[in-house]
Image: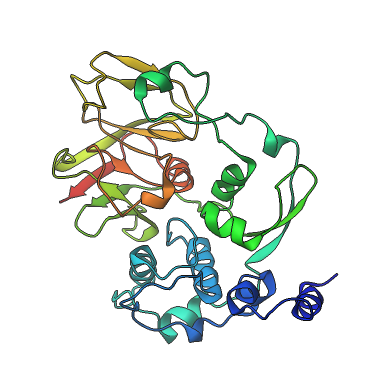
Length: 324
């Protein structure tokens, strides 16, 4: 049964709900970028906007990451627009306009069906404790549910994925609706700029052109990031995390060195881009919703998928410049 037919049938049974209709896949795919205000509204909406979902997916596909695709017109969306403008040598004002939408607008659907597999339900854990000592006792920092695992795969907030699939239990064999962000960006990065002030990371090729832009948490007042220029030393995928309160930071009451197992919900997520500055790196996170909305412990924190994409385009010796 087509989604439109399903909506018509339900309309005969229950009161009309604009927000429920707005979260249908067809509504997102048919939404117009022209309906989006040029400047972010002062007050956030209560429900995801189909057009914003579409905008976020198209920006993600273009290499200007909005971070988590959630359907809300937040600061990371404006950052992504400004990043896209910079990549296309436009005036980087972070506003939606014809110069942006004409380069983004695509007829390709941004939401499609996906059938959950047995692999999607494998490797899950019951919970992730907050305390590092308890984390160190676990075998894996895996996902806690199929919904969490798939939300990250599709660059979505878990809340948006669940709203788009209300009533679905995410069991193996079930069909869900999810956004399609597109393949990872390709290229050879020669220089990385981590800008704390604007909360973004820019990746440049040998011609000095920005080929990818990501929202980022870059240090904090308590734990500032390094200054000046450093270099990529290497890349570790699915790294274990060695917690050392004497070299890093103090977590809770833990005052001993701990080894926390690998996994997407580990302290540094699914990838660690090691820098020549000891103990510092560019890495993923177990909390993608918080990227660009808070500080880090001195490192450069990205969503797992953005960190993985960047890791695939760097080699040892790539320059990393911190702009604080």
